Image (tube, rainbow, N blue to C red):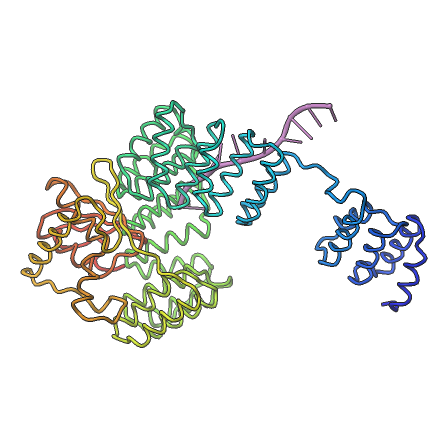
Length: 552
DNA sequence: CTAGGGTTAG
């Protein structure tokens, strides 16, 4: 690089814009314009000297791919001392709109609030499209209250505004509110379109809200919205998540439009969640016959199916299919591990998570430690990963290690996601959290739980307390377990529905071993079919056994 | 000179 003095003297000689441009050309042709210091010095002179030209400096700045802070400063300094220190370009509603879209993608909440105030200042508050974008950004950045406020204050709305609010609620884990708003929309005389029903169906899927889901499905058919694949996919997903795989399959076969990869995937996932691994694999073949090429997500769904159905061999051959060559180590677990290690791509977080899950089932501490180390390396902040490892330790009574995991969670600011369960009774969704006492019929629920406990004891059941996270006294453990949200939901189902009605419960986390055992007992003692959808799959309890065959 | 921008399944 030419000496500093040389550049300085060249800069000094720039007494006109022409000279400046000559210098710029020189810097570029001698490959010195890339050099930060000379570029910034040049920019600065151009922006502030009488010979320079502020807008020319700005033009140069825009052309720099990643301007340094000093580059920005040079132009800002020029702007600050120019006759018009405000931004020379006026922004309009579209400018705001694009900026907001950027915020949505970058999940930049505070930037969105800034644009929000600009937009009010410029008087764009009657622009429905713009406010819809704003609402959507707030929802996507996680501030549903702010989104709702925008929605409520809109002087008038169109269907997209409703859609944005409904899907915002559905995707922001407020599915109940999403369904309520969907109903309100219909009450106010709006005609939901395909986008609206997608949001509402997603909410039903999350809640296991079959009654609402069926109404929406009927509406889709009536209004011919089922000519849209995306809607069909959402309907299939809704039935499958509500536990009606057969119904999901019926919809699948009767899809009149062209099926997409996602249609197949949703259906395979439905079989997987119900532990029907064979059907899922059969489907993989059918799909090939149909000329649809599976993608990575689909293989993952199929692997999931093998995992849930305990189809280890099939799972391994699927891995082989995926990477196109066979690996044959001896031990089952190490085999899975080797396959994951030898994969050409970086192993996926989900694969390590499933390995960790398998370690829990088989009590393999060493491998669990290895898998969770990998997950931490990959920057996992999912509390589920930590809880799984913790459970592996707890099962071995290694309380010190359980404590270490908790410490690690604190340091990494991983919070345990609170468990909750939903159950739909006569179209009304009831939500329970662990130890919940807020339900109007709370007394009845706890009385029923006592009864269950008493009757189960006579059947020889003892709580599996070694799987609770905390190292607390036996009796306390017993209490913590007794009031898990899924137990509360099942108890409420027992007291508020007739004997033949199956009880459906949706849980946001994985079901714990004790709840699993208790619900098996309940299905036997009370002769009730109980279906629990947990984070990973469905458990169908009937006559004392579960469809997962205790493998999950 | 105008139009241009928003909501969508696994």
